Length: 159
Image (cartoon, rainbow, N blue to C red; front, side, top):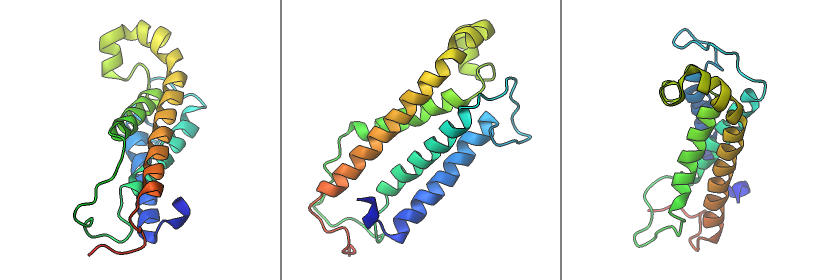
């Protein structure tokens, strides 16, 4: 289905990917910056998870982009599973927790303390990464299947 995407949709995917790289990379300090500090060096797997998350988020964003702009024809609604947006959001959040510094996250430190963050949360981060990527992939698959099953010709501009 992605092979039928327009330049507008691929542009949305590229911009969504770049935006997600920045949005996740700055606070997790995978993109070096002066705004945030990281007490524990990122694991080797955090970088591929960060990039894969950004690509999936960009592609997912593109599925919400109309091929030619404009509004949807009246009386048309997508048959999208209502859990798809929740899967995408949950996947992005899980990936963010996975790539972040375990002792820099206020939520984790508040809930578990420093020793809990290092002894319980840090070892769970790879599992969070897998779960986050799986949820993003499921959300993207659901959106692509919905678009493929849609009876409206996606190549015809709305208007």
